[in-house]
Image 1 (cartoon, rainbow, N blue to C red):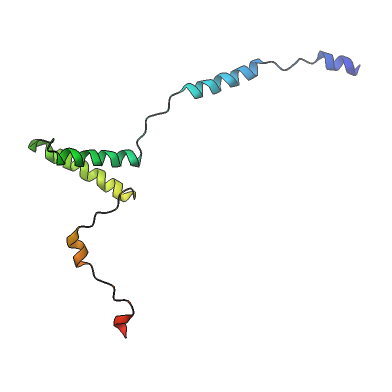
Image 2 (image 1 turned 180 degrees about the vertical axis):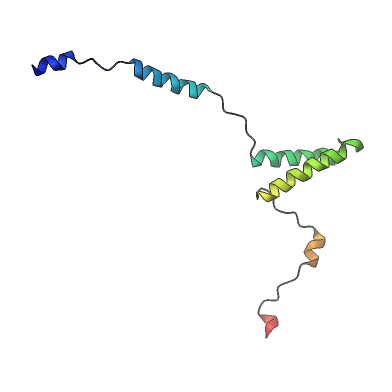
Length: 104
């Protein structure tokens, strides 16, 4: 009798496996959304610097390009992708640490 019960059971259908495989295939075929990273934004800032150094920006275009560049640099600095540029004037004004020698 137990042999009859085993024979009466239905085998696992491949249909369930096919639907999972089809869903996985759709996910693999879906292209990834375009993204911008910090490296891309740094590259954009470099492009703006090169273009302005070469004189490729007209006088009436300088203000909008400068605004975009300033926003871009502020974002990069805030996220640690770029160090704050230190000019030579600021370096001369910075106090020099005397250490413990000056306290004796």
